[in-house]
Image (cartoon, rainbow over all chains, first blue to last red; front, side):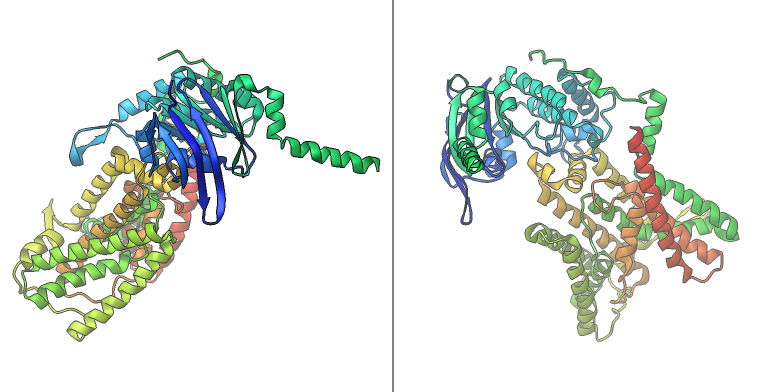
Length: 260
Length: 351
């Protein structure tokens, strides 16, 4: 089965600064690809390339086997790539239903008389959230009044509703407590079960290992490893994440100064 | 579609979902509520202190004055909801009038030609503001402060250069003046009271702006670019295009105001308009627009303009010193903003 999206040796520079160097990644239908890395490892640069906010300088980026160079988030959406950012790309003061359809509003009528299909927007939002397990009585409340987990759910439900083939999630559990994180991971697997390819960006190996099928490790803009689930254990993943050999050396040095 | 896991419906359980409470909550959440309360208070106040305030002719005068502010306050409110300022609006109105009259006069053309040229020039000014904003990414305060100063200088300088004085020549004997006056500065008689046609322009703009804001995709985008430009861009909203469009909307209203100015007085003073931009902004803020963007309404801005009109004329009818007008406006602006903030806090706490 060919990959929905595939990056091969992708690099990106900002002026003289190397942000990303020769990174490869695949996302397949019905699978979750986890991108792991510490702060500044290049995760957000990677996500911006996939989402169409930035373009790569070198390497290949293919969508369903076709060479791609995305010039805008709109273009990425049209090719079936939906990105849910850490800030969720929602506008806090706007009602839930307006946020749900933002940028892809359905209208009735033509030309200058085209108007929002408000009833359908309200109903669809309510139903889409219900399918995800959130029963919101009033879709008119500003989305800023929802909890972090609920907002995440709205963002994921939005991507699923608009027929995304690939769902890119940027640190969906970073700002959440343990219980809310669990709820969000359930939504992520629900999206996977609906046939989407998911790219999950996180710095939490425990969350990643729970749901991931493939793991790509980033370190200072470079690829530090790429594994299938059966090739790596949670312990090994955690060890590599937390600095791996560097950490061992550090503890070794520390213990020597102790005994000296 | 496969059944998704039913995850904790309890998460979404919220208090106070009884139907009665909900509609009240919705009303409380309207941005213009504070302005409406304020307008009623101002109306009641002047009804008591100014004897002639309640006469129908006064009513017409108040509405006329309100409309001259409201025509500009409505698009300025839309721009503020979109997260930007325009300080060049006051002098842009004058520029629009000057271009119209001087083009017709110098070319000895039908005044409608001048009106048309003025529309193009004024829209170009809005386009300039908008393009400068999205290209340079400087704050709109700086960009439009620049436009404001440049236009102030151009208005005076060019008028002086072409006419030799600070005011324009009369064009009332020129072809097309009568029909243009009908459109921009005529009176309509309704129930034996004369109303200025600008009131219709004002109401029309409020209706169109409200329709755009609440019922079109563009309206959704205006709220979004003001409430979270990065988020809006990320979901595919054309942020730059929306903002440029808002500046051109302001310019369009400046053209209407400018033509009214010209055809009402025939002669245009090139130095006028300075300071009005702040009145338009104040009307929009009293009407519930947030300075930070993403929140507000066209109806609110119209009510804000009405408060200005009632206060201005009410002070005259009460035979007070007109100098007090600005003081009252300042106090009203602060009160309205505090009231709006308080209402919004309560509405958000309850929902």
